[in-house]
Image (cartoon, rainbow, N blue to C red; front, top):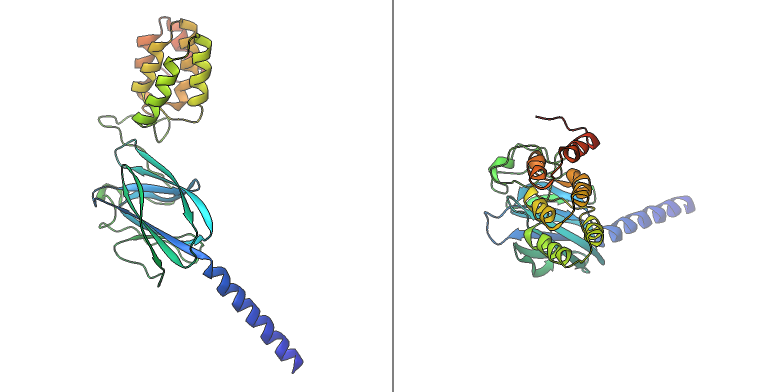
Length: 264
């Protein structure tokens, strides 16, 4: 009898632990203010959806925690970055999304986890796999993408070449860097500053051309070209831009040799 009671009590403790563990989770909903506004999302640098959706629910998130949310829009360089404080276990936090920000709409009790046909569901704790996206939720051009193997990237108008990185700096972020860059007095200081700011960035050739134009000396321009080539989004256009700013063909060839780029 003592043996049965012991194992009954042990089983009860396991069930209680499982229940209380699950009870500490919460959920987040991101919904576009405009159904034609599609986005991808990350939480704490982890991809949640790599196809563009307009309504997504993320469940199984640890409550009493904070998450860095990053949302990127289709055919736009705009990226929203906001820290979300999810303090309510068993509640769903509803956010409205537009290109100006992520806006908290309401916080309501999570009643069930049944998939809503109007939402793309991602279960973050591994209890179930997310469903396939439906045409009502995502842009039609994205339906055939495999959401596990491929991450979406910025779509640059009238450009169909290779890309060197997926998401170039948006205009506001680049302009903030560019203004401070121009204010540096010494050429070496300018180069050191732009290298620091663009170290983990992705840039368009249009932005690169603006930086090239600020430098006065050929050697500095060459050093910048060697640095920025692998950080170029529309990379097939890089050498067209470089030739406009570098006087010596040898410097162009040095960049090609560094990155093993053949002439067209």
